[in-house]
Length: 122
Image (cartoon, rainbow, N blue to C red; front, side, top):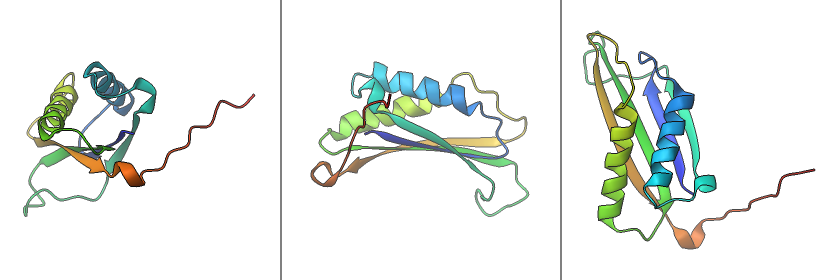
């Protein structure tokens, strides 16, 4: 916990490794998450459509962060805003393309979440 899913359309040139690093650092700096608990992954979308005009130059980034239940809605909103702001920094967007950046923070039910951490093998 937390699990971060970073989806982006293939018409955006994203340095996913650096972007995930920036996001993880921002989440740790927020004070809400332990550094070694964040599991982030990037998913490039080859098949997508924004709106109803396939010829329009549009793309999007969507971040879904699943966290253990129990945090106040205000905290979740603060984290969602942090994710949007962090992703926006340092990106170069394709000319003439409308880009939408969205984020959601979703609860995982604490009482039914399972986790096992294995020690490093020798």
